[in-house]
Structure formats: structure tokens, C-alpha cells
Length: 335
Image (cartoon, rainbow, N blue to C red; front, top):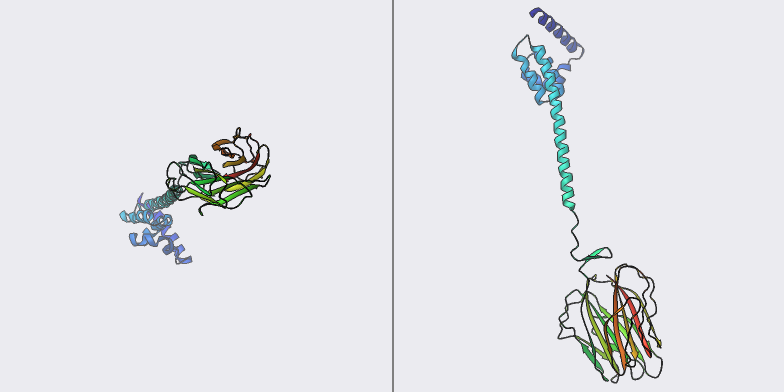
């Protein structure tokens, strides 16, 4: 048994000498890690095998070759196994890296996060506060006046939309209409039929500051003998700016009609209609889905403000059942 091991040892030493003769650095290149542990030329072969697998496990298995002369070859095999273990360790390290990368990916997903649910409602692809007709009011002097004030029942909420509608039955030709500077003119339509005239005007305040109920909105005319009709409405659920989409208006004598707008450009909108007509016969039956928000009739004229909420694009138009000279406006407002 000893002779067989020794014969094998002799062959191994011869092979090693041949290697060193042909390639003087071959043992050092692959077995340098194990040579420190083994310390002898016999152990370097085993350490060389161990060194192939990597640093830690293979080198340590090569170090075990010092245990005895007879089992050095076996220990060299152990070194190779250690090398395999070293490779496995590297693979495990790669797996650890992959796990780490997976952790980063998970972190990225966490950083992006699921989108927050919309607390209000989606309108035109954006989350808005819930739509509401918060409050409205109407006012008419009931007699000739150069100005009048319309007041909401309560203070308005900052950021809401305010719509101011004005109807005038002039005693002669139409003149100026003056409103607070916070309001922007959407449309004014004057009727020049007959000796006296009518005017309808619509104004908006986007993302308005809170309006105190006690202050209200004052509207003044360039004539002291006209009939002035006012409507004021507050809405929530709108973008801060860029509300106005399409407008149409009409005037004449007979059954009031607004005319028809161009195709609207957004799905979720508020459509509003304003009509002023001469005579106190009243307005009824707003058409095409509109409903009255405010309406008032006096001996001189009838005034009404109507609206509807829509969710699909279209061309807005409406009218009411009435007679006499009139002016009417329809406007669409993007949410």
C-alpha cells in the first residue's frame, strides 16, 4: 500500500518537475494562495487544485495536505472539492447580489408607489374636488336703478368658481356695464331691436378669493333709468384657470334661443345659459337638458340663469319658452 502511494507520489513529483521545467511559473500562478498554507512543493499541487476554485475554501483545503504524506493526493482532491465549494460560494455571492438587486428593484417600486386614490372626482383626467353648486342668489331692484348688489347667502370658499350673470332692460340704447375687476367678461350680447334694448352679460372669476356674503358684488350701469337683473353662483370642482371653452349668443324677437357653440374640447364641463327678455311673462322649459338655477320676472322683463353638468363633448345650445325681445348666451366651462 505504501509502495503504491509512493509510486504515485513519484509520478506526481515527476509531472511537477516537468511542469516547472517547461513553464517555470505554472505552480506559482495557480497555487500561490495555497503555497503559504502548505509550505512545501508536494502540497503546492493540491493547493494548486484548491486555488482554481477561488480563495477561501480551496486554499484552506490545500492547507490540509500537511496532515500526512500518504494522503496528500487525497487532500489534493479535497482541495479541488474546496475549489468547487469556493466556486459555489462565488455563485452564492452572485445570488446574494441578485437578491440585493431584487431588493433595489423592490425599493424602486416602493419609491414609485401606487397612485393615491382621488379624494374628490376625476374630471378630464385630473383629480378635482367634488363638483357642487355651492350656493346662488339673485337680485333685482324692481325699479329704475343705476346699480345694484347681489349677495350670496354665505361667504364663498377660496378657490371656487364664481359666475356673475347680468340682464338689463334699457330704457333706450344700451350703454356700459361695470363689474368688480376680479370678474372677467365671458360674453355680452346686446339686442338692438325696437326703441328700447336688452343686454345679457356673463362674467367669471376663476379660483376666486373668498367673497364675504355681507360684501356681495356690485354692478353699475351707464344709465339711471334701466332695469337691472343679477345672478351670482358659486361652484366647486373646477381647475384653477383655463375654464372657458366655447361660447355662443343670440338676440332678436320671439322665442329666446342662445344659438349653438362649436364642438367642445373636453368631456367634463359645466354648460350655462343666460336669458333676458322684455316683459314679465316669465321663462319656462329650458331645453336640451338645462335646468333653472335662478329666475325672476318683473313687469319690465324676465331674467333666468340655467346650467347643466355634462360628461361628453358636444355642441351646446338651449332656449326657453317666452316671447318678446331678448338676448341670450350659452357658455361651456371645462372642469
